Length: 423
Ligand SMILES: *Cc1c(COP(=O)(O)O)cnc(C)c1O
Image (cartoon, rainbow, N blue to C red; front, side, top):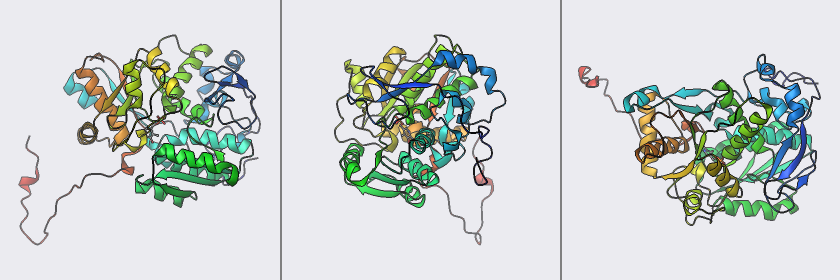
């Protein structure tokens, strides 16, 4: 039973509920792995994907089922792997808004452009979506200690949800990870280590230490349930658009869980009969200082070569090598989309522009998607009339901002008239 101290807005409070998971499937070989057991990568070393009995689900779960449910990601509970609602570890994963950039679209004469603002989620980033589901599953499967490498936001979400679940968490980040991520991770009860290397080097430490320290490895895509949480971005977006998809989605791509998850969501929705065969073009956005997926896309490769000396202000997408690279490239290609890189200068200028013209402060990774949209318009890769959705995956408040503000001497003469902006 859920007692006091549990979230009360969650409406699925009553014990066991139908679970439609049939098995986990190797994303490369298709080999089946049993549900209800702890897994990292598949036997052959690839990410595992959760599979459901969608036919049976279609009989029990309809679009109408959603009508009375709370506006959070647990409204799609039938499409998620948690068996016992008592295992749900939640901090209030609300439905995030679509913010239309009306002034900019009007000025540029383009079709509708929306930002899906994931910065409203607990811990200030969409990492909460993946981690709430993954920690709930870890609780269900009896995990006590978790560890992960991170560029910041995932570690912050992990420490928050692990503490809430009464688990111990260990978070390894590159030494130049934004200070705020390190502080929030530590304050929320996780042990956080600065490592002189990139996220892949941090991942190696987790791999080396997990047997000795008794950690369950929570690395991106080495844990099969985070992607199910990220999948809800696709479910939510379709529901918000009245079960339609936009023409294109611009997604800031690091490990790619969100892009792979949304692609999976569209497929499952179609098999439930909630969506037709139409798909948005999936555009993977990276920074020029770390663009392994863009390079692989352009050279026609199925997997990406690791990027050397990765560097960008957009820390969340500074991922030199992604274990799910082939899944990202597959989704991008199947969707008729593409991969595009933008400079740090374009990112900073996009951030300033959207903030000052629309009042929406993006994170650098979110700003990268705006810069990529502009670049793609310029290059004719995106139709001007297209309805485009950009993903802003964290609150802009987490990141350094340029100095602003002027000084006033309240004892001196102040020229109030000069304060008005020229028309
Ligand atoms: C983690 C992160 C990303 C990249 O997400 P993936 O799904 O792992 O590719 C993008 N933006 C922000 C702000 C992030 O924290």
